[in-house]
Length: 139
Image (cartoon, rainbow, N blue to C red):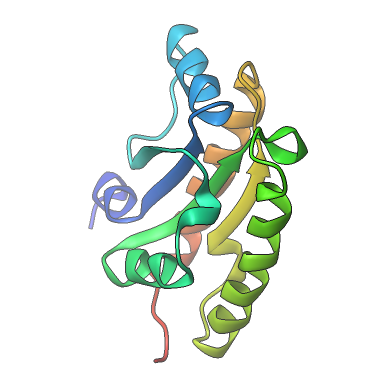
């Protein structure tokens, strides 16, 4: 299998908050910066609204890595970032039980002009999923 074909099967999903991370991703495009083409950005109001099962469904359907990009503590929805971090504790626990590498799921704060941070997060995840390959986990 060619390196390009292998890279394409390792999809990365980004959940980007509409108030911070999504405009940050947009600024990366406006700066004509490039990032791996196996990256899919989903604009979301608040990632805390997604149930824990969402992440496992993504992995089962071929997503190799997920980055939750939020506003961090400056989230306009009071307590959302803290609630998201707490929810991920439960997701990580289940990932361990299923023998899924915890590095496949990451929570990070990205602001509206954080071009370098956005690119760094995506490139790190791309490198990781190329090394790990598609998720294989025990149910």
